[in-house]
Image (cartoon, rainbow, N blue to C red; front, side, top):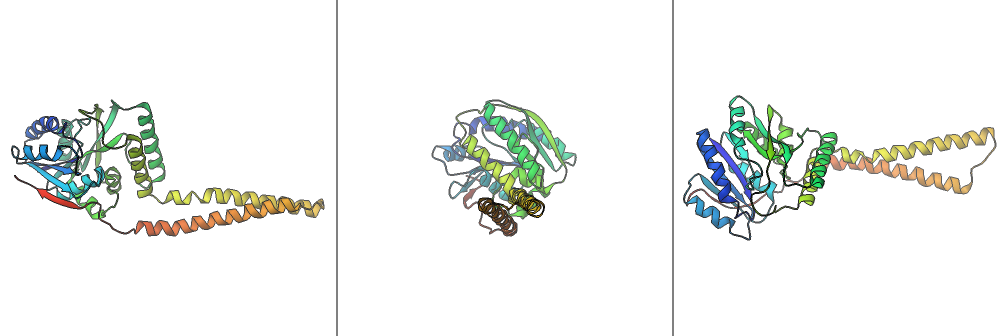
Length: 308
């Protein structure tokens, strides 16, 4: 069985067109399937459109969240309710072609645990958006504890054991691509060219949203940013030590005493380096507490509707 998770928020114009392309793909695979629309409560007719389609297609299911928790939380909620042996996460805006599921499924049938979609080109995105995304992936992969393939989103097919491991992590941010990279196992890329949105505009801030995703990847999978405090601390401390050695040399061999202003500057720099080191040590303990962070629920389900 294949489960398709579709997070939606104010997408009334895209849903029918999305299903017109998705349903023939699932029919071609010829597997039992379910389509779970994970709905952030919307201000348009998204819920009504889905409810109407449910009366026609009994494989469509509606998962309503109690309030707007965001795309990541909606996707994780869908993972929790998915019953399939293989689970696909895909957006409804048709930027990511549903037809790619056929190739993903073929790979998973050959023993691949994760078939992830990797973009060759990104139509409809600004130069700045592409550069920000590229920089974000480089920073995340340099400083985090897992390697996230660049130019990827949440569009991917997961085996059941990958899903179970992700749910067992009980992560509070829902950064799916990071969680999948962390879990590991056999993962293969499926290359494609990303299209423009089918209708409307994205419902998530393109730059602030990307920045949030980047922070989730960096801070959610690494304590290294806390250790960055050590760099200026060590540099400043080293300068202070070298300056003290130089002044000692001048005092012993040239009988040249430092001025009060020089001593004051040295004391300020020395104490500042000690403070920064203390903050770095404190950060290490905070980092360990962070790794054992409190477990608030990532989402709250209002209602799960399977049939109308």
